[in-house]
Image 1 (cartoon, rainbow, N blue to C red):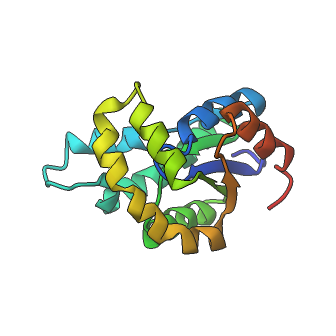
Image 2 (image 1 turned 180 degrees about the vertical axis):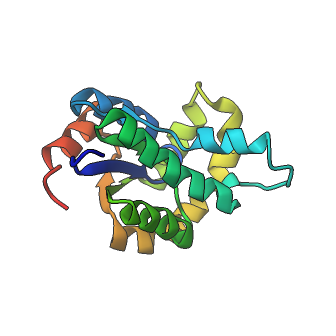
Length: 178
């Protein structure tokens, strides 16, 4: 990382909170920033790990490769990464964030929040990933269960009724804060 502090903006939160859209907007606002979606690591592993699993985050290999891939991308681009990825299991988040910290990477952990009604509306109306609607709706409860630890370990931004461009601008305007 050539002496430049490595930084990841990790956008966490429930499905429908606007992580992917906000991440795209954030990349436009941050000089030299790049998008890294750890789901691509999961898609890769599904072709090699032949174990049935309902979520590839359960694989230790996924968590380790997310850390390694992020570090390699930071070395390659020498600019911040923006990572839109839901992590609702505290031990998994800790493993990833501790792994990044051990490699000299600072993580700005942000949780994009919205009301349950707003999340349901967004998921129901999503035309881009409509096939994932049922899975996403089923995981709203998991988000509610995780809100306690997320609130203690991340900056929480309420995105209810706020366009992604404004959420991204808010993140950039407060970027000097821990």
